[in-house]
Length: 114
Length: 115
Image (cartoon, rainbow over all chains, first blue to last red):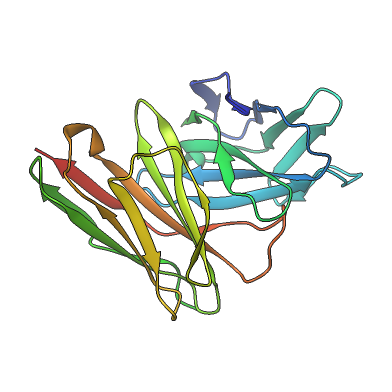
């Protein structure tokens, strides 16, 4: 069963505007980690931000923030002040408990318009 | 610190052949994971090696195998190639710690085309 769901295959945003990329997940493990990765056309996956299941506050990393709603099992990525270089595929991922592999959602293609 | 290095970057093979892909993790990292990425199936987990032992395995046929050496370098092998094996194969490494907060560092991938 799909554990990570990204319902937006593609998103458009105007340069300098903020954008939210959706991610919902499914797990019965109380201990898990949520990740967001960016994949430019070059192919390499770049780590953006991490949120632990026990973290009380939403994670932030520069222009990236994670809107973590544990009861709803959602972990949306917010990119503020979009830049042209933000155009890429974005993947939400989860690792359940220790010693488990990381599983990814289908991804969202973000296009930033000038 | 050098990143994750995957070789070769591109590979073209024909059906029925076998292929070996190589991955050198970040220095000090003991875990190496492999993923297959296709437009239709997205990113699918193949397997993970930690200290030369396979720790986790995804849902792939036995034609897909891997190994890890004592220096943490890893190889992935696909035997009897099929057209559907055409994909970007990504390798990722993580440090010796194991936990749900353990992030992966990815290489640029090997683009395999099966003709």
